[in-house]
Image (cartoon, rainbow, N blue to C red; front, side, top):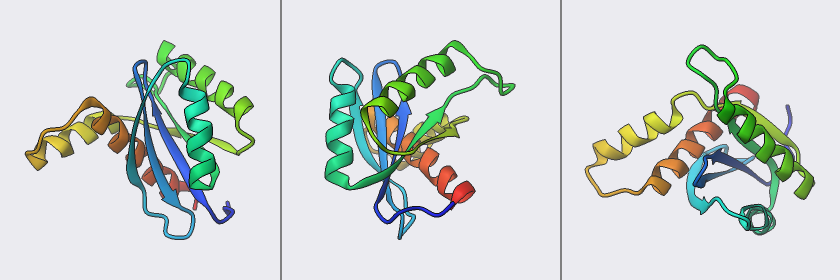
Length: 137
């Protein structure tokens, strides 16, 4: 799939926060970009972020159960993605997010520096984006 030049925004959507990662379609290097509090302003904050970063695509991590089955969290993330798709005129892609949060926390723990749950979410979003870039670009 060819991508328009610009930025791909990846999201790790949780109940409390949305981790954000960015990658240029040219460089294809994902990097964490922080986390947003999940509340009534999240969609408008993501609209602002996408405009500011020149976003051309959005990738949303899709959680599933250990056997790959849909879960209540899968449905909640799909609903969020559908709401986001209505608010942003950008292609939205789903990417499996299996164990990205566990992987992110393990990496941050090995660094030996303090980190927050938002740091975990942002790094998990970067892993989601790396997987997407590997699979699709």
